Length: 414
Ligand code: PMP
Ligand code: GLN
Image 1 (cartoon, rainbow, N blue to C red):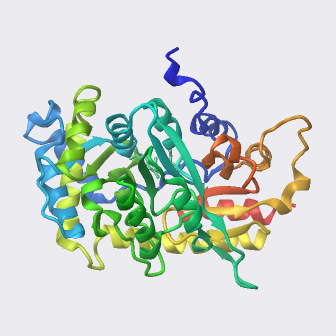
Image 2 (cartoon, rainbow, N blue to C red; image 1 turned 90 degrees about the horizontal axis):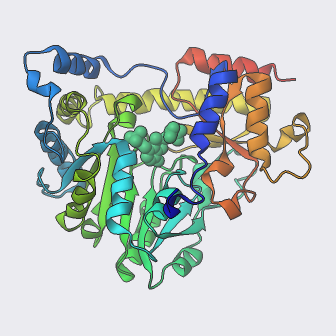
């Protein structure tokens, strides 16, 4: 085994997906919708694979199928207020996962520090380490909610002095994930300005994982950090058709950024993956074409999905609250974190084990109640896993029948 794999071999998804497959009757664990992508997208895929243009079965351009990079440049150019060149400012990847991998491999050197905000999407840490970098963690700290109110993901905030103290000579980049998986926090403009100012001051890059960019609720605004002063030139923004069009299995993702950064991502990509499936790229291009024509209108799929998911969020919040699992109401994403400390007496003690309570709870719950969720400690670095170990994460991108089945389990608990 190569040294770069030391300590990164364990994976939460491998473990919990297997548990869910074996035991779950209701799976609110791994994040994916159990409803289909929109018809216009599925039809576009069928046309791509069964239509006249048989070239869609062959290789396409390495850095992105031309129709897809063209529409992404138009679409994100509009959102960022920036003229984008489809050939240099956009690169298509195999999901956001590969976009992240390209960023770390291309931009992080041995000895570089990369700041990661906890809790974080778990792959950031091993990816930084595999690139030879050192992750430096800074936590979102929860504030008590107002009396009688449920906690909100907005109650989890960075301490500005603590954040500033993490920046130094060796800081190469900050990873930002807004809306945040797992909390559902949508960083406010003020919070992003704080991060942006530190990036500019310390000449650091920003890897901005925005895969949940359309999933924001209650009229909240998703602010793109690349649009803040001084940030375009130092930010790679990452998106995913999996989240955007409810098609996680298609594995189409992208990066948007300045040539000075993307040219290095292209080097990693051309020497590893080369390109993402042509037909899937063609279909996603057509999906974006449709959405560009409807941007900001009620019949846009992006707007429709957020409306639907907000209702599902509210239903799951109610179910959990009624069952005594205190939900933290998310402002975005399709995840919801709930406090399960009141259930400690249900779960057998594990003397001598250093496994966090939330992990033991989630395993017990799927085996005994048939309900799958993910422990929040999975989204913390090793030394911090026991700091926030009374929460589990549920995915609510599910058919109403699935959410009802979850509710039945929760209300019949005792
Ligand atoms: N970033 C975050 C925050 C995610 O939740 C996910 C979900 N898998 C990814 C990246 C990877 O996205 P993709 O499925 O497009 O590779
Ligand atoms: N992003 C998804 C989640 O957070 C799934 C990630 C994975 O399965 N590797 O649940």
